[in-house]
Length: 222
Image (cartoon, rainbow, N blue to C red; front, side):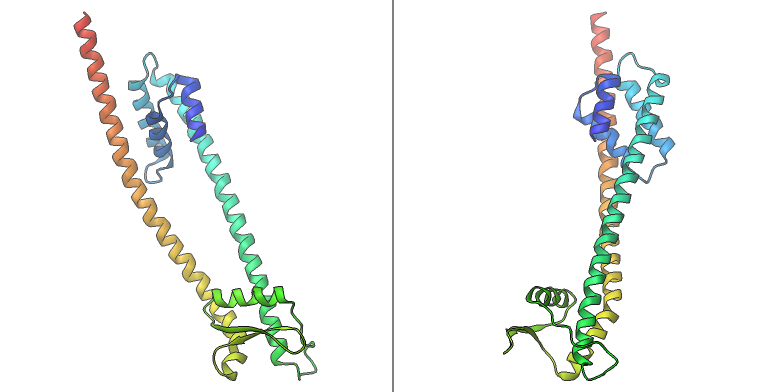
């Protein structure tokens, strides 16, 4: 938005927020081809700005749209990198929690490492992860050795199988969450496209009315 505002002000001395909003929203509309969007803006500004031709406006708008596209690509790449980082961190936490539980249930097996003693902070982190993925935690208590223990609902067999179940359902839960997020984004985008089209039509109508009013005033002065 700031790039559109500064460009219109610098190149055409336009500071009206309605023009800025119109050009920006049109640039964000993925349902229209880039060349068509540029043509719409050039025609719109040719009528709105006195003394400017489409030959002069066209290159300015082409450069503006290219810069906006580059900005959007950078923002998308940054968001994807952040999402990947958060996903990797969550996977690491789940892996550590599963390793600790497997050690608890296999302490008698000489081939496995000895039981890993978790700190209170690690126990609390594991509890939050388990709650996040739908496992009920009855109570957090401190045993006779001063260590924090988590009491889970369900019988002994349920408790023993919980780490495997957690890892097996994690992928499915992530997929479902991603699918829901995409559906929400698609619905929001469709709503925004409709709003943009309505706003664009209103601004075109207002510009046409303003143009006709200016012509009438000129005729009266003559």
